[in-house]
Length: 261
Ligand SMILES: [Zn+2]
Image 1 (cartoon, rainbow, N blue to C red):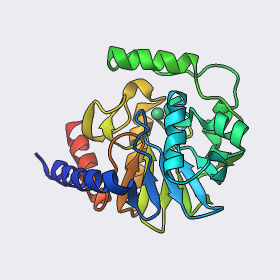
Image 2 (cartoon, rainbow, N blue to C red):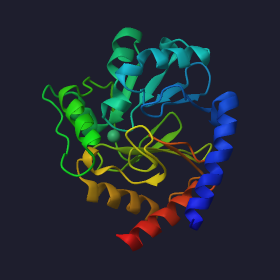
Image 3 (cartoon, rainbow, N blue to C red):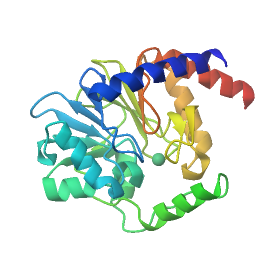
């Protein structure tokens, strides 16, 4: 196994045992691990400063509520939800949380525009597995739809997080970087497993079937890393979090894919 693979697996192991005990990833980030289709993270800075990064697929609504309860919270205790992008496995409970519990929903301006549209999503099909094709069809017919409360722009700050626009997987995909802990929440633009669910563990770039513009997505991820933005930990949209050394491992992975590709 190459260098990136080794450091990746070591981090996965540490994180799994730690998270199993307390659900905490780093600082005040908690991984709501019972939510399986995609990763939902809770950033709990106390009353008035409680955020979800993504909120899961609607089919896992009760699991999400259970996890919030286990964290000692009611949905209405949430200050807001920060969406990494518009796909329904990440934004599927946003409308429910907003309408029923008054939770404010945030997304990048480009995805906010699409989320507010009446027409159906257009997903790329063709490449990828048959299962991925079926999931893409599902997304075409039942996309997440809502009017977000606040549209975000590149460079903005919210909840102690910097917004980095990473267009490609969707037009309005973002990374959120948390300055306090050095955590990077990467959505589906940089993964530690191959979705849907976890087909294969390890670093992965966005899956072609689900990406609006795959070359642009990859270029956005590379450009972000070329800018030298520091981070220590990776909290991706699918796959286990990496605690410590995440940027170096990601750089090694990006380097290896550049050589292959
Ligand atoms: Zn996605």
